[in-house]
Image (cartoon, rainbow, N blue to C red; front, side, top):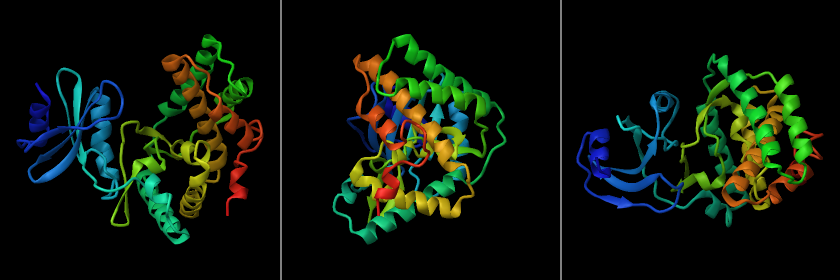
Length: 292
């Protein structure tokens, strides 16, 4: 079936038009469409029944400020068609460039509430502990297999292997895993979280590495305000310890991706990880106290 047919079967209506949208990952079909009077971002991705179930359950934990796929369908050929609300407006990244302190506070409060809603309902999911363990071990094995030598490499592997043995998973929930200003759209002052492609079940801290560790300096005030709002309403005493594990894993994963795709060592992100967390000996990044 062509894209128009996939959309028709998913939305149960004939698309008024199908316009290609540029950007995104190679192999992912992206387009804009209108069906039954509603406008959607369409993505067609390789998938399976577990992912189909994930999107079904995700819809039960979202509100109107989350532009997650409201319609989706898995086809026999292994492709899934996802239809998410098309949100018109600039990215939060663009808006922060000229935002006042009051606007930053408002954006941060909205973003925190979106994440609190997404993370609200915990799941009993014992397999996640072993899944995280395998993930962390796998990162270290890949780093050594490729002979990577990025700054702090030994610290990273030692820290992750320690986490494998000591970290106890808590509050498994739906997580977005790509929370950053670029993935919020601002429409008439209201934030919308987009791009749920990387989402999964996981710990709440898995949603914060970009905001705590890979955040650009000009976005740190927003990130700090968001996290302060979030932690004021979430009972998560182990947040910073867990955040460092996921932040370290994110940099390790990026180092592997950069080598596999570009045959280059990661430098900037690895240096920043070592600097902000003092060689992984502190849990709260140094920029936190410097940002007021």
